[in-house]
Length: 112
Image (cartoon, rainbow, N blue to C red):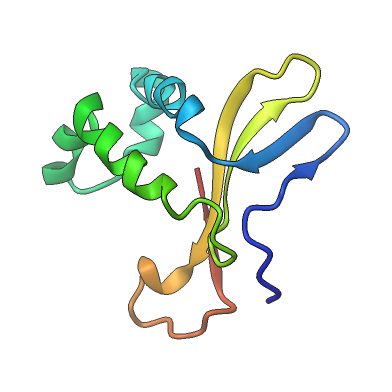
């Protein structure tokens, strides 16, 4: 895999850009909608409470954003090209982050 980082990607309708703090609060608010988070917040119960607290999440996002432009980081915020509205996020990471039995960096997982 050639590492280009979270380079901007454009389609006819969308623009995917490296994540910034500018859109993180909005995306977090979307995740707090019960109809959304019942499918997305699939983490262990002991971590769920932490995810529901913006101040704790903000600290996590601020730390995460320090590496948003690294060439081996693949995390985008998704914007509608026509309106500029942020509608989601996408990440691609080494699968071994979720499954230690996988030790091949070319195997990736997609997430939101």
